[in-house]
Length: 319
Length: 319
Image (cartoon, rainbow over all chains, first blue to last red):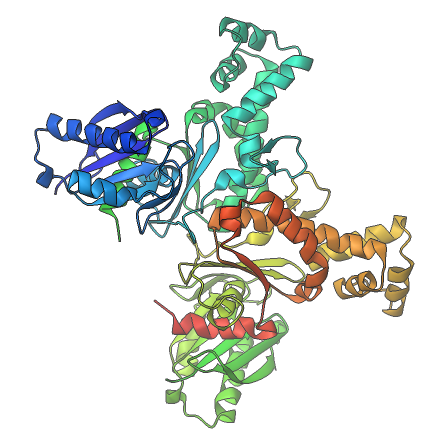
């Protein structure tokens, strides 16, 4: 069976990979997005990355089954038109699928990047073989993807799976994108930095303080994680809070979807061991045994390539 | 086209209706459930109601296309086996579909009652013609049903759509089925009675107090509704709270599903005008315009027959 191209369009880099029909990443290239040069340049860079991949594999274009493109934004997968992509200039209302089909000469499918990442984990990652999978990506923000009955669920206009905007604690002081106490306001990289910044003003946190100083006074989720590991109690408390909020959110999703798998991806997932215990406590307290027994909570397995592999899956499993 | 039997099994009564192929309720019968007589008696009563319906229509059994049965409990629609039905003795693990197929001699489909009610509203009620519909039934508790891509969504073992168990306010004093601050703990008939009972201890609420006295000292959601309409401020505040919590929950569901329709059913929906303004305020504050523009929030249209009609739909639209 012919391989696919999987393309993951980020704000800074575009990753293009050659993915076998069974989901193995055979080769990948990384090219700059150059968003500042405008929408046409982004398309050109995608094509450049794709060409390099195909050339490296010494293949002809008619040996490639198709290309799947993961895009950070709201889009209509059926028509291949991107509706809103805040980080990609001039891409709003761009018929990305048709433009790339023309330029590459192979079938193209576009998909939201968080959906693609969840689909990648479903295909060859942590969630292989399940019917119903929920993907949560904990990065700067919180992204979501829903695989229901083995297919990506899009909703009316492709705006489904915005799991980070679910309210978890409606009267919490933290607000993100106007939504008070949302999962993203409470359990994202930005939230961790905010908790730490405020905590440092009022609490003794010598270990964290020292580590922040050594990091040019920049607080990052990773620094807070390392400080927690080194015994800093403020930092440990922050990850405890994050795990608690995340657990409440996942408990909600278990009641709503009765899924078999919840996969946690993104940079913050590196601290899984720290936030998992309070997360599991909330899940245990807030769900029933019948649905809890069906579901596994797991760290993502595909790392930074989940989106690329899932994009390839989006063309392979296209209806 | 042949009509269907729609059967709605409640804890007290079983409703059986003859439903045309286009969703018109042609005739209905109501028989007692007699749950205290055991599981076999419940099956016999279903058969009795069905026979009366068919006899009243002066039809032969081979003129009936099939029967759909809505059951209050956890069940596996594919195998027709009820897993847990707390209010129906001896029904746990009963192959209800096969038993009734034997007794009635026509194809039978079983479905969860809240799913059936949502499916009924989707077929011929408030949500006709949409792809993605969320049903919320506000009664003593809060039930849910999910119609995604025009089909009932069941999850791994039929335990999906437990929307009432979603946490809305995790530190609220109210707890339902062990879940602190769930939608059911905060926006159900039981919650309204609890809010009113506690409110009456500490607040002036002369109008509500008088109405409760006239109702043999029994507080019901309907009494609180009437008192609010008559100008009682405690009662108005209670429905304001209920609407606020409900709005937070619906906002979450809009982010998760990007649906076209949210249908609110059940006895509490009678007070729609009272709780809708605070509900809509939360939805407006906590969702984005793109997905809000896709969705309509509406009162259910089929009243007490939604479950029966939806049960008929569950056999008509069976995969």
